[in-house]
Length: 130
Image (cartoon, rainbow, N blue to C red; front, side, top):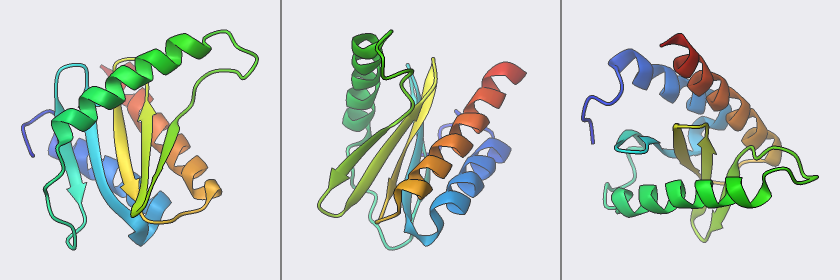
């Protein structure tokens, strides 16, 4: 889905960032905010049949619930969520008003950390450059 939510340069930067961190294990990448979403990348061997609208609604709601539930806990600030499925992983990386979810094949915890740090930096740079 390409709806103009991101510029071509932003789509390219986000894709390059995720490809660098996850390599060939990157399955898909979707950017979202409170009002809309855009699938930025889908690996060629996958079909575009996921119900992204439901995914986004769930991920946005869950982010807010998680953020509120653990605010001020001794665990520290929320950073990202990893969901494990039979055929891969979904990583949700969110800042205040936008985020991405990235699906991957198996990658290491170190790769998830690198992915989260790199995507967070991209999102924060966009937020503070406006």
